[in-house]
Length: 267
Ligand code: IPD
Ligand code: CA
Ligand code: CA
Ligand code: CA
Image 1 (tube, rainbow, N blue to C red):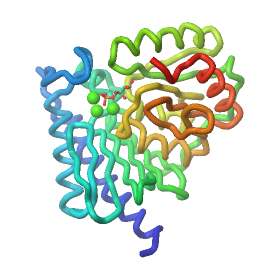
Image 2 (spheres, rainbow, N blue to C red):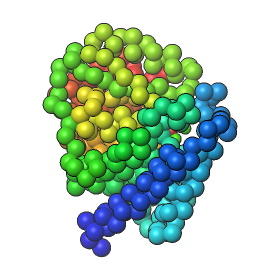
Image 3 (tube, rainbow, N blue to C red):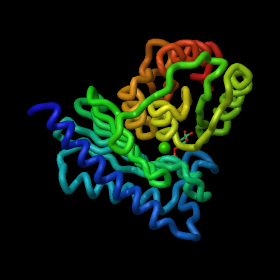
Image 4 (cartoon, protein in one colour):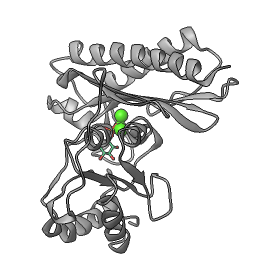
């Protein structure tokens, strides 16, 4: 089958599921929303809405593409037989959502034979949908994303995030301690998917984080690359849980080198 047509179909599925889940989360947030369970640590929380949103997304996908594989943060998991796998973060930025802060997103990516080919990040409280197709560019509400030209590292606004494990947090704090005086400023918005799309659309110069899972980064990483930024891990590696770095060329290389030298990839 024609790849362009196949990717377009996957994009439609992702957009529909992400918009429905975004609306459910925006309109259905209970006033007394509480923590349903904790995960890797006491501060790693999940709410009933994370679970409801994942259920809605997998139901949308199943209806149209029952043979595809699934990987969702809240437990969706299926091998599939079609060569396509959906990588889903139903609610990225759960802690923001719990507190009523607006930076949270629905992130849905489709992989074809192990490569991410479609990514959608829906940010309901911004009224923005970020979409990317491999080789097909990155759009914000249908308009091509425009990233910023690369500044010097010393003038870069750098986003980051912190994994939930407390021993890892101490190491992350050390990296921030050294990096902060070397850059314009640091932002910790609380959603990896939003951080990555923000690099693609010029709201951040760069972003880095250690400890991401595939569902945090799949869609946003494709968006940032399709918007013309570079993404990666340690020098020569792809973005991964070990380290994720995103920035335009010219800033990417010095930031990646600096993070590698600081040991941002180890706990
Ligand atoms: C988290 C957010 C956060 C990042 C954490 C993620 P969740 O995802 O993306 O910004 O710093 O590493 O786990 O749990 O809110 O989906
Ligand atoms: Ca989570
Ligand atoms: Ca996440
Ligand atoms: Ca999540």
